[in-house]
Image (cartoon, rainbow, N blue to C red; front, side, top):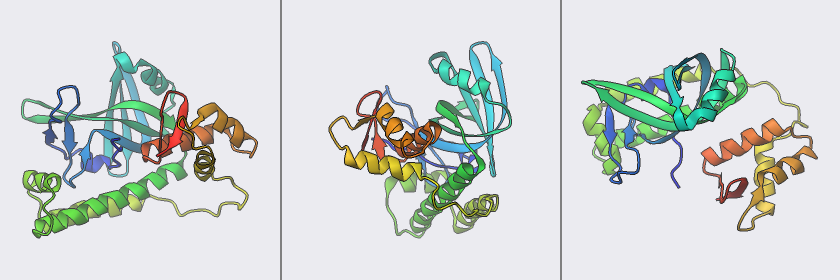
Length: 256
């Protein structure tokens, strides 16, 4: 199962390399300067603009390093309707597909959303921290490749295409550091505050049949523990994106 990549807009906006999958039915990979190979992505930021043009909906979502262009329509109409209902500005999370094509010699980058959800600032801040960590881990591998200590072909493809040097890697690492400065200090959380993510994982571990559990069963079980439905659904979405669980069939979830 293909996992979703976390990356900042400032990194995605510098991508100029698209690699075909080898299967005409699959989208090409978008390869970023840090060596991230993206098709599915998981993003978060402030939705700042939404507008329509015919049956297409366009939006702009900003994180501390820049902005993503969101494009949806046609088969994605339910997502477009959700997008149009969200007030601006609002913090949102987006899972979707990275796209890169060229208009002449100019790269055109966008995200085609599959799911979008309103979140709060603490959730957005947590995304920044985890995305910065993922970016720095990719850069450490890139450093090894530049020194000739890593021969992973995917990493080497990014090193060659972007001409990575130690100085360039330092610049990209500084982007992650700057993004983290936008995170508000964590406030004390009451000890009785339910942790929806952990509760969902515990519940799925106790119900590990071949079909897993129905989403509605999870909602009902955690409602009895004082966890609101929105928190449960947000936790489930995050677990799926992070490859902690999957959907064996529609309406059911199961731990990987």
